[in-house]
Image (cartoon, rainbow over all chains, first blue to last red; front, side, top):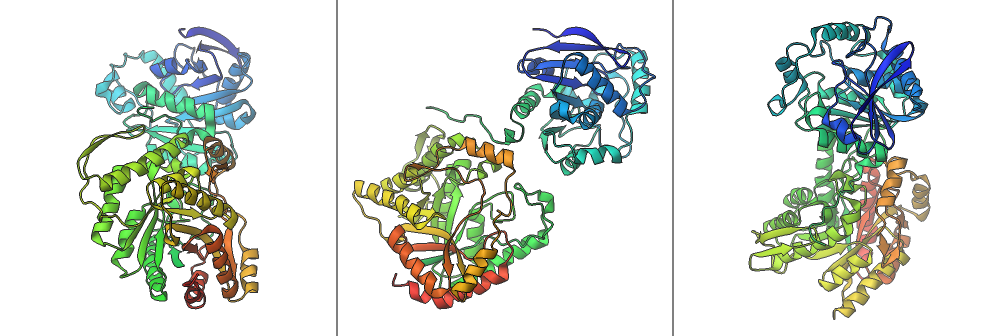
Amino acid sequence: MEFREGFVAADGFRIRYWQAGEGPALVHLHGAGGPRLTRAHDLLRREFRVIVFEMPGFGQSAENIRTRSMPELADTMANAAEALGLDRFNLMGTSFGGRTALWLAAQHPERVSGLVLESPAAIRPEGARPPAGPPEEMARRLYGRPERMPPLPASDPAVVTKQEALVVRLRGPGRDAELERRMRGLAIPTLVVFGTLDRIIPPEMGRHYKELMPNCHLVFVYDAGHAIGAERPEAFVDLVADFLERHEAFVINRAETIIHP
Amino acid sequence: MKVSYFETGRYVAPPDLPREWPVPAGAYDPELGAQSCRGMVERVRFVEELGFDWISVSEHHYSPRILTPSPVVSAAFLAAQTSTIKISLLGPIVPTSNPIRIAEELAMLDTMAPGRFVFGLLRGTTNEYLSYDLNPIEARERTDEGMELILKAWTEPQPFGWQGRYFQYRTVSIWPRPQQPPAPTYALGTSAEAGEFAARHHIGLGVSYGTFELMGKATQYYRERCAHYGWEPGPDDIIYRANMILGETDDKAEEALANRSKQAPFPISGPLRDALLRSDVTRNIAGEKRPANVGGVLPISFCGGPDRVVEQLRRCRAEIGAGIVDVSLADPGTGNVEGMMRSLELFGTKVLPRVRDI
């Protein structure tokens, strides 16, 4: 079954989404570059009802000059999920969308059963910037092993300009005291995933989530860059699916190693 | 009766250390770690002088409670800095390791200092499986097969292949070999499987922490299986590891028992603990089903002044059949090193001379 495109209204926005699969709901919020379906989504839909949103102002949507802050964007996405009948769901956020997802979880903890933050940008060092430039430069920043990846398509300059303005407006400071205060009280089972070759957010940022959040698990995906789901989809999805199924107990290995019975 | 002192590394943790297993590695203090290693040598030399027969080391991971993730390294370090006392490794956790590596490392020890070592092979507690990512459901069978492979690697003179359930090698021929016969070797555990394995291979059995009655069931089962295989184990074939609170008087020991923390020093969080218990369901004592231990508080088996403890050691000998007791004289992880040193001295002077005829 392929992903089907749909639209839902929330906070006066007409929000595009793609949906596929059956099972527990998993909402995905994309990074600063806008939505992109990858093999990771394709693998996830085998176990989850996957809903990938295009956040207002990204991709093909109209320019968003209304949303003033990340908490506001998070509320809009919570409303979009509600409009799709999703009362309680698993939530995954990538990079910029990781910050959105954290705010959504912080503002509506009762609605989020498990939280996955892929290369999250909620805590950034000084000077960290979203990638920009021609496809080769984007690939070099997004992937740990760009030589192993197919070339990225050229992006539409108008979309890039529109998205960049929005990201600069919403992304907030590298360390946000209010967000971190809320993270300390957020008991939702949370998985933070960084690629060991992330060249946009240093993977060392992962430890801060672990320090702040009471039920947080940190995993490094070896040899992946910032776009983990695109670059090592099997490894990423195996981890995410196991975590969302078992939460804390995912640390107990259940793989069989028997060679011959 | 022979007496062994269980050396655990004794990292004196500051009070603000996080109290959950696994303990964040960033909280480790290298100076405290170095102090703990110096302390190991001091204490082992001290009990050697006091006349203890053995010291023991163990394998535990990811917390300062017992700061010895590699018993082989501990044993080599301590053997090099003492002269006569036997060093027992109780022991390498077999199911999480490469059995050939264990066979080789123990053989190296036995070659470096013949007659100084005692080897125990064990399955390990369930939380330890998280450290090396072992599926708990496979632990029992991997232990049995791994132990068998270790013994085979020690004794088979020709290169051999191993077509196991969990391990496969096309050729094995270890150098160095251990002494022939190898150092005294024990299967560690209270389960029917451990008892059966030890009996079938004519090796000793080490049991730990349970009551005399329960441990007596485990060793009785072992003795029955030994009889089945046509041999009778002696007192030196049974080790009992246990906690002891020794005071100058019974009252002082009772007071220390009453003040003992009811909490494990670095417990595992509730949901993970429950999941571990669900994942490890084959634990038993001599075949009677028991829940797994996932890092809870371990009981005190001996408590009293010297007279009472000597009496308890007599009962232990009679009920468990243990000819070797391996004692911990202060809970690992509590940081009470001075109190333990006083207890060791008291044990050495007031108890040890009276247990030889037990």
